[in-house]
Structures are given as C-alpha cells and as structure tokens.
Length: 496
View 1: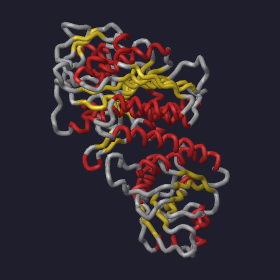
View 2: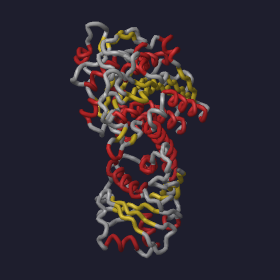
View 3: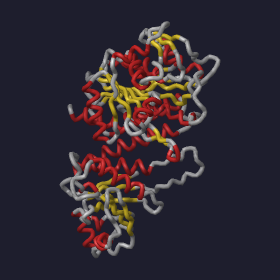
C-alpha cells in the first residue's frame, strides 16, 4: 500500500474514488463545497433530492461526475453538524472502508481530516484513516491457491489544507507504521499451526532484525532455558515435537542507560490443552494462542518505523501445548526460574507457566515497566465479551496510562481488580501455588498467579482472549492490541 498527502483542490486530484463527508443538514466541508461547485453542484442536487440522509455511517457511491479527475465519489454521513466524537468519526471511516472494497477501486482520496473531531487533531485523524482503510483491505491468502482479494486498494491519498499538512504527514507516518504492525500480527496469527511453529515465529523475529539495524535478536533454545532453570516454561513443551524458543528482541532507540519498556507476549503457536484436552469444537482457533507474541512483533516493528526515542525489549516465549506420553500431567509439580514451585492442576492453564518464567527473565533488564499480553483465559471473554481487553496490574500509574492510550487508539481495555483476597484461591497443599484457582474469577486468579512473578517491577497484564481474533464467518485475527501498545509508546515518547 502506498500513502500520500495532498493539498490541491479536490477536483484536481486524480484517483479512482474521492471520499467526502456530509452532515445531516446537507452541509459539505469547505473543500467539498469547492469540488461540488466545480462539478455543476452535482453533490448538492443528489443530497437535496433526498437520496442521502447523511446519518452517521451512511454511505452513497456516486459515478458519472461531470468535471472531475476522479471516477467515483463516496458520500459518508457524519450525522449532526457539530464536533464529532472520536467514535463517530471512526464509525464513519469504518463504513467508508467497507464500501471501498470494490474491485474497480485501486486508489482513494479521503477528505475527512477537515471534519472537526472532539479533543483530537489532524495527525490523529490522518492516522485513523490509514489504520482503518488498511485494516479493511487486509485479506489472508498465504495458504490459498487463489490469491485474489476482495479489496484492490493500492493507494491512499489524505487530503487537507497547507496549514494542516505537517500534522497530516505526522499522522501518515504513524498510521503507516501502526497499520503495518497490525498487518504483521494478523498475518502471523492467521497462519496455521503447522506453518507458524515456535521455530517459524523465531525466524520471523530474525528476519525483522535483518531489516532494521537498531533491532537486535536473540533466540534462546531449550538448553539455554534449562540452564536458566525455566522449569515452568519447559514443562509446557514436553508434549510437543516442536522445540520451544524464547525470542528476545532489543530495540535501542533511547539513551544508552535509559531503563527499557519490556513487552512480553504469549506465543503458544497451538494449544490443544495438553492432557487436560480441550473440546474438539473450535480447537482450530487455538492457533490464535500466539496472538500476544504476534502483537509484540507488530508493536516492535511499528516502534522502529516511527523511530521512537525509547529502549524496548520484546520477549516472546513460544511453544506448543499438546498431549503426549511425556506431557505435563495434572498433579505434576515444577520449579519455576524464580525458585517457586507450581502444582499443575490443569495442563490447559499453560500460558501462565510460560509467562511466569519470562517475567522472571525480564528482571535482568532492569525494566522501567513490564507489560504482558496474552490470550490467557476464556473467563475474560465471558466477563467482558469481545469489545475490551482485560487489564490488571500492580501499578496504578501504568494502568491509567494504558487506559488513556486505549481511548486514544480506540483499542479499549477494562481494568479488573487484583485484590489480595483472590490470592487465597491459588493455595496448594503440595507446592507454593497451584496453576489455577478454581471456577471463580478465572481472569483475576490468572493475573494473581503472574503477579507473584512481577513483584520487583511495575507491571500490567492484558488479557486479549476476547479481542485478539474474531470467530464465526468473519473468523480472523484483529491485530489487537498493537494500536494500544503503539499509542502507549507514542505517549511515552512525547513525555521525554
């Protein structure tokens, strides 16, 4: 996809389709008014005829423009003439994006940066145009013989005034980087488990490092993990023929001695549940159990492309969880890298086992903050559905920063309590702790388990089990929470 900014009058911009915003009182934006006048008031006549109500999210595709360099115009309803909320702006964009997925549209010019949106500027509006259109244009074809895609969009032009050009260009750079990170995360997650193995995921990290000089990649093998005492992580991979990998990514964008932000992403490339076998229905979707790891790769790629002045460490424990004669058994006890012992009551609660050793490993980097993200619990989907990701943590400032970033990025989270009383549910008669806490508060007790390995740093946990992929006819990865992480990193950069 190619991205451009343009300040020329709309009637002079050459593209397949021009996107124009219309308010319910039939008002057009200034540049659209000039475009309309140059085209014999064609838009005004269509609107006044009553063919377009212009409610928020309404769309109407027009052709046969009399004097235009573009072939089609897509009218997008903005609702009442007032400052749009960010959500209504995104709703209008999403409607436009769906209707631009036509085989005859390869280039589009979007004139919606002129629309006033409450509490945000042109950079944010331009960024959201790119993110939304790129997200809609994504289509998985890697394992299909027919590579034809529904969308043929190749070129996005963001229009605006000369006064706004600098901010639009900033949004373009950010949007392109974040959209690319989202696409990478979606592609990795959509790959089947027989292709996207722990070794494949590690190889993708190495390839990313080869593209960018300021990324350093280290891949820890099982022998390295054994030497480090990562008994919890290695217990998960016992049933798999695929060797586990611990992927370590170093991004040095800040000062040499500045403490890094550590991102930890669960990389279970397939999770059958182990001996505690999952039900067959829907098990194919357990290829998505590595969405946390994919999102870390996507966020690091975005950070590099935005050249953020931060030091970031990405840690991705990658494994499979399968049943086998050598696999973890309920009742087994393993010693974690921290020295704490864990009784395995359910082998399907494996994500916390690979994460806990990785959190302990994160201490060696003297982190400023650690954020882990994982498709960790079905309980989070039950509690929150597929709209927000679950957020828990031991530091209010960090959690508040993530909530703020989620609101800006439209990648929502909802904070759940991490009270000491919940720790009682993890008691074991035979080890320092059990790996599950029973049927109640599953998302919270999973985070309570991880919290025992995050006592020495500021830490937040994102449970993305309900948000990392869609199910049903639209089955596919979403790339979340790459936008949230990217916004958090942007916010941290602006604070320097």
